[in-house]
Image (tube, rainbow, N blue to C red; front, side, top):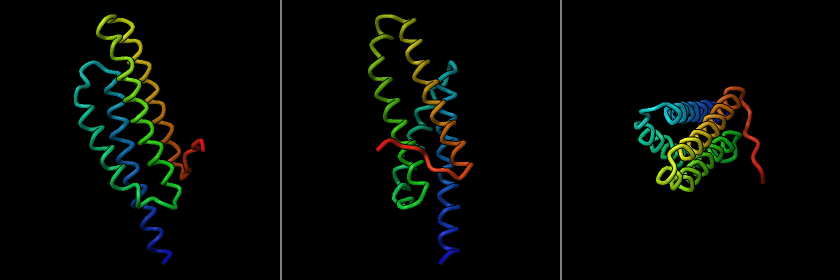
Length: 125
């Protein structure tokens, strides 16, 4: 029984690590010119998180799945809201998207560090 639980936790950590690394590539790509491949990797990571999140129910990994999904959703909303700045004002659009991308990168790095430390994410209720 204990071996099954340990194996489940190792598997969840591996899935979490893969997902965070895909998100990290996307976040870095969003800050660099020519990061057009990012959306494809982001979709892969998001699908992975949605498919595997039920496996994490009742473990400390559950908070990481919520963290990653919420991070992607919030970033997507921020990108959509700031999109008109690109259409009418190039510099403000660039600044807004750079800030959103930096925030996204920060959240992914924070989650990755806590995952490697074996700590759950601190989520508001």
